[in-house]
Length: 590
Figure (cartoon, rainbow, N blue to C red):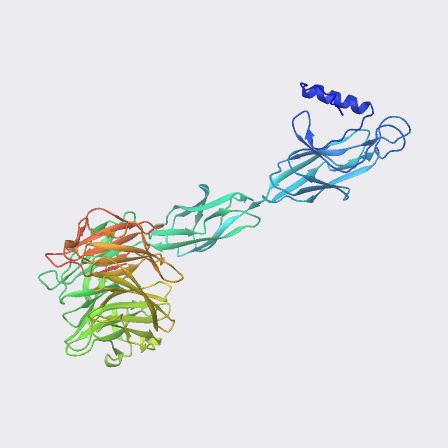
């Protein structure tokens, strides 16, 4: 069949020609097309039509046939797929796009019509409503049915924990500000349409006390339900930092105290710092869970000192002292179980094996957990320089530096200790090949990390809930590693390497405990290499800042932590912590 339509015709001319052909009695097969306004015409398929007389189902003109008319209208706002309309619950019409639609079945004058939504669209989820959808056919096509689609809106929210301060403001997609004043669930007032993104962030961190709030599960795409899985956890930033300078002050030692700038992490010496305790050689420190007291092991005087923490971190020395027993029972290691609180001390006993002493803490006063020091003392080894507590599983571990082993105890009711099965555990091959020093426990328990100052490594031990140590994995670090610490979220681990002036950084696999070196590690501790001898490292309670004690230099280096990657960036110049000589040995942060 040859085309009778010239190739160059305007839309208006073409439409007139089609109408003329139809009026002349020729059959026309039509699919979706465009009307004169350019809208898509959604036509139903499968209908039969005859033009002329003779009783056809659809007819126009003479011959006694009944005139019939189309039922249709216009769709607007459609974004999703799968919209299906129905007329009189039987004539089904899928709609693929916005524009004009007509049902395939025509209706005679006087017939009723009722257009409804048979299936709502999805991806995005939408609700389509019908206006002018019912009526009676007059003597013209029905073109006034209006179908309007709008995307479903869903709320975005989640759970907040750890909030102590005020002024926390959250945002979604860079706006929709939401001030949150209490822990629990939160929901943004502004909802998000289906198939649209959401991105929850912290616009203003809390103050009074200063905190850092982290968002997890904060981004995604809304589908067909409210978002309730955003998690926000707030941690206090460090207020005060304390340092034990064991050999400062002519060998008698000193204690330094600093305030921490919550925005930058920078340190400012507290009034009167550094302090000169009457006891000799402060070795380790720990802050009471109340934040009111600092406990110090005095390694040359057989005493544990309690210092009161005042405004600005200023210390009042020796508000209380507790003995470790004989004058030759020198305390070194120190750890706190916050559930008691209980204070555990590792001592070197002259002429014998080292011991562990257990104390209950009450308003800064330490008393043996059983009421008597003799029954509150437990065997350890030589020498328990470092202790660590796993409060989740109620466990205490001690590294015996000269014995090459690790002892483990379970912490029972009242703070009494019971050796865990298999304790003591050999540390690798033992001396002289391996020598355990500092330890850190994963915040949720299950993994113990120990620095090996001879093999230049940090070693991962997994352990059961009862404290029995299992297999180990060895990770190379810098020369002569001393301190080790884990950030409070359990994301990153840092090791201070006293032999080459660096800090090694790792990310932690939360499932296996395995370590992966952070890009840029090792980090230079104080701008120069080994003369500074980093001996201790601690992360502040919010996980924003890391502090490194440079033993030979008598200074502290401050680092900011990239909370996404764990990379360290130096903040300012090192800060002095000493009176004359002999630098930091241990750091504690409130």
